[in-house]
Image (cartoon, rainbow, N blue to C red):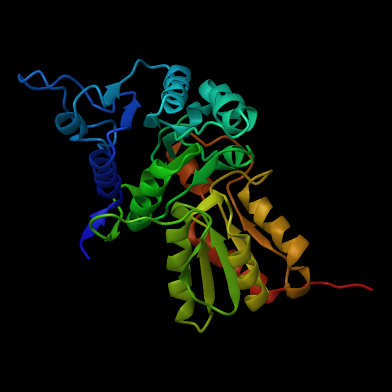
Length: 342
């Protein structure tokens, strides 16, 4: 299979789905990127990270729509377009801006099918950027996927590699319910083998990226790459780490996580979201409620501290979970035993 970057895999999938289905449109701030050239066709870089480059040239401005800087209007218009039969892919430039359009998601799109008795579908895909480490400041660097995961009626996707980005995005665009597709900024330049042509990955099915028997590590988005590196390093010492990438947080593949915990008896959860009411806490709760008898040691959580993302570069690097912190958590859970009473 050809090697493709995360960025190119998303771009390719958008083009393939727009060619396959004329109802698919793309809209958002700077998705075209400017008014370059003399032909009258708007085309430029395709957004801040170049993900939508080439779409306007192929599909025109009626299907690739640069919007004003108003997230509430972008997401609101996408919901309305979906109700009329289109399949919009709306770009929310940074997940941090979710507060501006949360009503359109929380109280409208997530509830349309329920309120209308299942008589309508809302096939909206919202692509958005998440993640710290690039010095973008505390208002452009958060990972707020847990907030969205808590909302019933929407699906939340966190691909960790280019192949998953392609397969999950195609599934999102074809889904008849609202989907939030979270892309980590650090992953755009990462590459791996990606299938050509049509490729779909079902929601709610985790990927076991490393097989192991001593400890389970559940990681999300970019944290999967870090967990894999630590697993490879520890394997040289005879420490067998199983790494699970849920790929979607809603729906969540609880069975795969619990099966792994039953096998290893130890759990480390790595998430760039916050330590309170986040996915790390949710997975820890899952283990406590449904696999407590299998646990041989306390669950370890590796998350940022409960603070805003620092603006100072060296503090930001220390804020983000690192391979060293993941390794320490794994070694800690291997050295501990669960105290039992009664």
